[in-house]
Image (cartoon, rainbow over all chains, first blue to last red; front, side, top):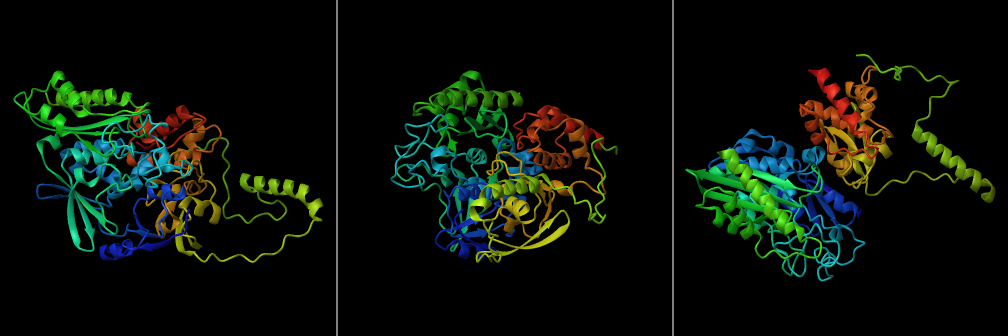
Amino acid sequence: MHAFDYVRAKDLGGAVSSGSRPAAKFVAGGTNLIDLMKSEVERPAHLVDINALPLASIERVSGGIRIGALARMTDVALHPLVKQGFPVISQALLASASPQLRNMASIGGNLMQRTRCMYFRELTFAPCNKREPGSGCAAMDGENRLHAVLGTSSSCIATHPSDLAVALAALDAVITLHGRDGDRKVLATDFHLLPGNTPNIEHALRHGEVITSVFVPDAAHAKHSSYLKVRDRSEFEFALASAAVGLDVASGTIRNARVALGGVGTKPWRSREAERVLTGKPPSEETFRAAAEAALEGATPREQNRFKIELAKRTLVRSLADLAGGAA
Amino acid sequence: MTLPPCYTNPEPDEAPNEDQPLDPTRRTFVIGSAVATAAAFVSPMLGAAPPPATPPKSDPNAMPVVLDVNGKRHELRLDPRTTLLDALREHLDLTGTKKGCDQGACGACTVLVDGKRINSCMTLAVMNSGKPITTVEGLASNGHLHPVQAAFIRNDGFQCGYCTSGQICSAVALLREGHTHSDDEIREWMSGNICRCGAYLGIVAAIREAANARV
């Protein structure tokens, strides 16, 4: 691990000013950052510990809930407000990591976690456009079974690993960021960026800015929502494919639908195409299959991950069918 | 609570007997043996020169860290890179907590901080300054094993034992969390602790027994 100086931020202003220095990084749970610092993929010169900031509350606000960025995954997953009004968030969190890591990892840190692409995580694999812009992509023709089929570019095919971010993308969550110029808000769907030619730029957060909270609006499709995650083993594993779905069904017709996919996209993959297919239709297997076809249209596999296209479709169909069955 | 037959009550306050040195821990024994073995080979070549007395170097990056472990306060100066796991093992000699993968994937390093189970390899010691920490060494009280420890022994919840302290710390937290209503639930909520020997049947049985005993 490279040497760094450690600072404990006492308030938000202090955090922003310490975090604005070159090569400064914020640390909350540390479960991703410290891991990557050990392998020297991350080499901060200043580590700013923000755990003392009062940003861990989970509360009802006008029109929805606000989750503090320092709330821990366990506390959010088990919170009654989240379980009752936004089950997809609770389920996505409980399907993530392990109980120990969920006790440590914060909501803000979860959104900031880096890809699990092994070529990114190991310095011994030289080419990685995300780690060293312009160096190439070893995954493109390498071990790419776990890589993305949606939102890929010729520079990068790494998936975004978060389950929570998929649920937040589905539910139109809004992320509040705090920087030198005060607060600004970014839609969860706009927070993570497609790799394009700059896979090293992963999110809308500016250097020195802190994620302070996540707002999730109340909605019938949020209350009636679920998360289905398919993976190589049943616990403590990243998604091969996952689906965050919400349905508002009345009189045999889908009035409103929300669909986002995980494990298959270079960013948490909201599918408005699938939502358009579902809206106004009866909740049937046929409708769900059509929505899945729409969601994966344009998917571009590499040699080893072609299976993910059909797997994602089936994951989406099953999650919608289970959810609709539960409504009947 | 009945202690398992292999358990003998320690007398923590008893003064060490000068004639009979305390049992070496496995760690000091192994390290001592390795040093002795190496010395046997090396010393003839070096003419058995005594090692030069080097004063302990002060680390210019070190910063004050207070670790409150098993009810005992330790004032340390540590390089901020030191993980909580390394601070426990290398600076406080609390080697019950094990280093397995050192990347948060195996659970061998599980300890309780503020009563919650965490991976001590994935957090820096300095980030835990002043927080109450419980390691496997702090679970037994008044000469009695923690019920989870006793249940692991009774149910053969281990083979080689390397993951066991992490399994036990994790299970102690799990009982408090209450996710022990079925074997499947126990398995799901123990998924952060890997056992390469595959002693899972005994681990689940031990946790089930300890959970039932609490009700």
